[in-house]
Figure (cartoon, rainbow, N blue to C red):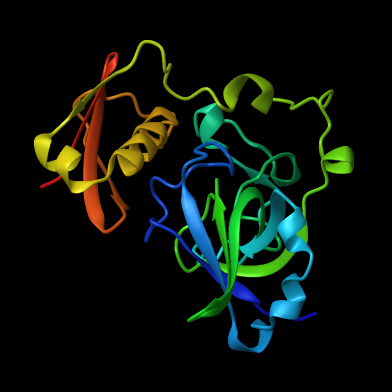
Length: 229
């Protein structure tokens, strides 16, 4: 069976580090879904304007093992990177088929842009250029399960840095390089704690690329220091 990308997404992340670990964690993150030329038919999106959210099926294009072999177990970062669990009990990118699944909010649909029909979304957890295999509408009456349980992720996922007690120290150059909206997104990215969860070194500096700039940060007790050079 051959899967061909129908589109690619454009986001502010040119590399993997810093991208939220799940869709919707940083709601302000925006992206644009740009279709491949053969799929740029406005008729394919007829009726989509009535849906607030969509599912995206996409390719973990930057998660390829050198030996091209699948492993039955993986080590989720949220479990400290040391405990192994079954790959099918995780959302690890290293799977028999490297397919990702994300739920995103539809902000708007431009049927007549220079790139053909474009869907603007927010809450995506993908780096720019990620291939998209399919788009499906999100249906709350079947897709939402409020009584669902989440296994080991129940306690570990979403446990980023505590919003109430964290303070930010942004350099002047960083604050002046982004709009207030982008700065709020950067704060949410940092609060989601993109560091590996077995790292807790206050002097260690981490770097991620966002919106054309290289942002450096460190976490010292209850303060996040961030700057650009």
